[in-house]
Image 1: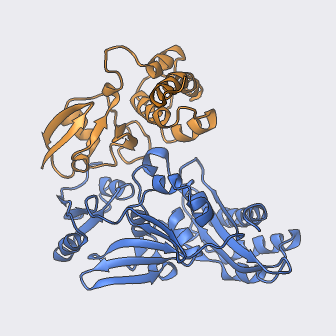
Image 2: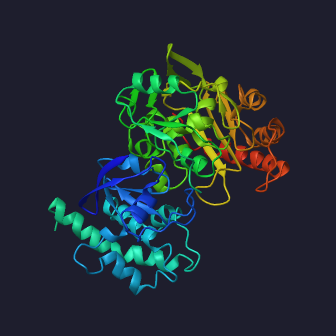
Image 3: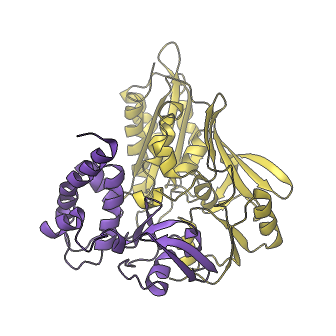
Length: 163
Length: 288
């Protein structure tokens, strides 16, 4: 089936079988391999992408269901070739080791902090409970997300006109 | 881990969706897909066609009124979490939904999908049965409404016919002051519960419980009420002695499955503990 959506801000057109999930579409058809596939049945969170502003598991969504949507994958978080504040915080806090889960951690945390820039450590842990990491023990990931909040709070204040 | 091939349609009306289902007995419905996609990936189901409800209008509303709370089939967990009206209109529903799966899944998982999938450990079917909710389905012959207790017939089994679409869940009116609790135990946050208890009761003039409703998930092959437990609670003030008696009765009132996650004995013990915790929590939740 022919399918149109926006990926990282750019319109894409792709021809997929109905059974192809969004993660395979991104990786195999559109060659955007930043999205990782761990379990392929909705347990590990590695394939998390942002669809119309909301974090979703791209292995649990058919590509054809993304028709007309705006999809942001990990490649789309940074638009100017530099690390985002969230990515910078991950680097600073060693919030990754093997890196397999990192795209899903970044997309999930980005969606969370965009909506909830004041999320506390408990909320962050609760949200990231849907993303498995077998290396870090999660503590540096939570620290990195906590540190990145300031950038999202500033962005939110800028939008609402608060100082 | 790849689904078998299928055709895909996203009709613009409910009538078209039903016609597609009626024309192909091997077709099935998809909405959020958060239960169906794993089932397809494991090839536990191999439908010939998926009929996607994403373009069907009128299925994503939450209505709060004198006849209770009406949840459209495509209402997502996230929508329930975000709807502040439900704090008063149905606090038990909100509490239970907070336990459903993970952040990303709550952004797509739907009311209708959970009801149709009918996992014995799923929260919403448990709330529906405990609250005597009604489920509306529409098929080629029109609409029909079924009580939740009847609707769930076994693990992953319901009275829904292959050419029917669930359109709405109606939870009866929730009066102010009602006491309630939802407790579940899972090995990890977001996992399916090994056991869970939903309960509520109203209070009579003398401080006794009345209209007690207690339902179980996880430790059962389908969600069901524990009528023996409800009878013990009705007309009595809920004190420590009664709580212990009720918890022990609850453990005997379930017939839990054995699987690699937990034996039946462990699940019975969980039911007792969760019932006790639930009754203690209910003393704090609600009230005049």
